[in-house]
Image (cartoon, rainbow, N blue to C red; front, side, top):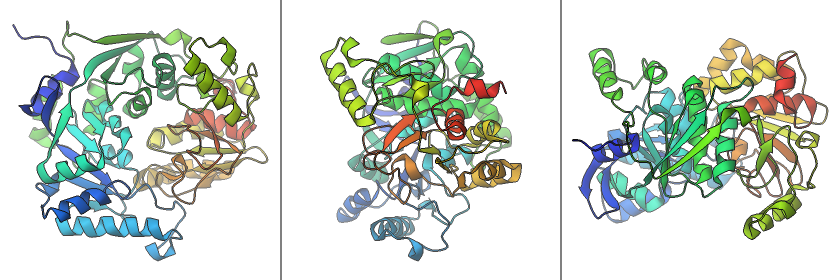
Length: 472
């Protein structure tokens, strides 16, 4: 009798070239993505060893991290000489090795974890690697995606394989239906708060439950994208008819009979009944409200209708010290209402929440309203394709009419590596994935939340329960 397997175990087994020891395999990588920021050293190592790229057609390069999101017509208009050099070097390396690149002026340009699925490069059952931790995004399609380091990028370029430590399977079940006003972002933030920032270290997480099935594919991407903030190196959702519909018809997806054959295989990509889970977490959907971070770590979050916690009530000394430091940095006091936090800036964007469904959801809150006095608001679509779609639907007009700056695509204010940053001491309601000290700029204070919640904060000037605006 065949031993029941989890979805993660099935994909790893199908891609194992050789078992190296009890915990490690040589893993074949179907597709590899690189960007201008994390790839230069890998190419330098490849060149110093005089090695070619073994399978150039299985790699894609994207410019997204350091580029400005303001409109420019040439690299000469970039103020940051180092960033310009990184972009130029990526272009030269890709030309040398015949690797496809979405450069800054390509109509397909955008954030790597947005453009890859929207172009059909990521499919169920694949193994996908990238020099970026949020490669877990592709788990929403039933693929195994994970971030890698520079030496591993070089190894994949040269061999299409990776020495890989196999993770333990973990199941996270969301029990109950998806409540009104609650999004995938709220669900994953609730998971991180429950598990802690290291609760999923060493695990491949699979998300299950009625609420997961109710989400569209883009919301599932948000969940898998941000699961890494709970320590997961892999996060997955089994593919279903929504998945098949999403990937069908995209430029790099199978077509015709090839698609029919692919679907037949994709339908087998489910965890077997009786599969062994090393760890399980159950989250009650009736307890989830829109979430907001109050601290400097994604797990330091509370429901919007809650309060800033008192560190004195935290039993674990290290957690108590972290909370005290976070509140000092954030300028908050224990016991204050989350909804009393005033906002200086708002940002909608990032690989977590910049897809068309995110923009549509935010636009529904913004329509007919104006950004509050004194609030600076920026929207950065995840790709040029998303930008064009939003403009064609009139969404861009809603953002502009509300008082948002409507920018080009890129990582932007998520990590403040370009012209977009939050000035020291200012508070930003952000749809991004990390709220570390200085993440959005030196001294910046970041409150993570869903795009809808960011829109609500924009028009009220403070953290606001979006459900109250949705009733209007």
